[in-house]
Length: 181
Image (cartoon, rainbow, N blue to C red; front, side, top):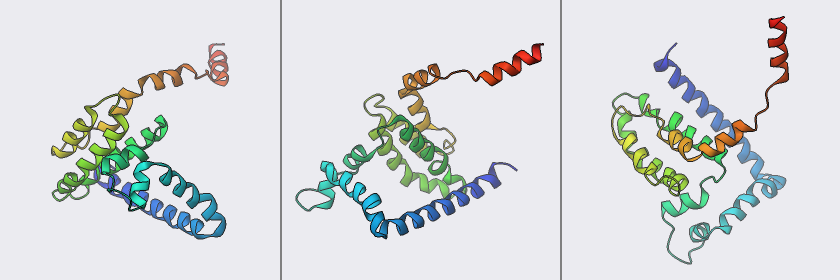
């Protein structure tokens, strides 16, 4: 079918699924057991961080977006990968839906992506946020997955460890031996 037709359908399907998930989680969260299982852990995690306390209570200055991103960005490499894929595949390519108007969306998305990439990769790769910012601001460069490439560079040892722990599937080796006979 091709990218011009598939991308809007994929984004619309993803939007509908996300909206359904939000509605279901919202309905679960307002029930009494849901408040204990869903809302209370979220409130506790927000109040455990200094930036969250500044955001909720009026006891000091409001935290900056960078402080909030640092406090609430995922620390697990797999969750970071999911966020990077979301940033690159969904948010980075959404400007292709409306050809000329879409590039103006990149002006809003570029600083947001830079803050998120800075929160996740500033310690290992300080230039990642600037690369992501430039990639989103320059026209027709949205096809480059800058966040995912930054994740690959920062987590290469994690990937090597995961690949090293993979065990070969014995069924596949049995099939290969049967074909040789």
